[in-house]
Length: 68
Image (cartoon, rainbow, N blue to C red; front, side, top):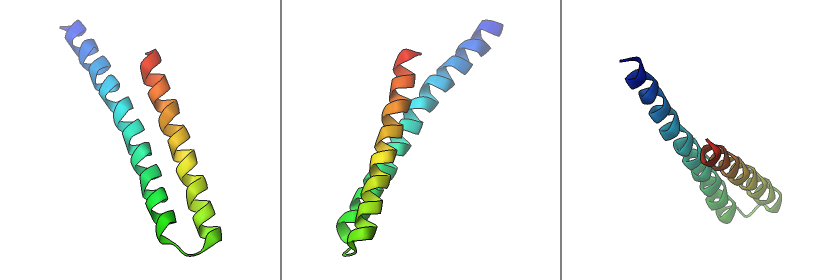
């Protein structure tokens, strides 16, 4: 019975990591969309920089998941 619990924990962890990466990708898309809608060049640049950071975080999470 312990093995089932351990297996269940491994499964939930494996599911949680891609979900976190997807959430980061979604935030990047939100920032990109917001940047496309603003007329303020400074704000646009900040949003695009944030989008890049979210994309990098998503890639890092996906990489962690693929090595586990």
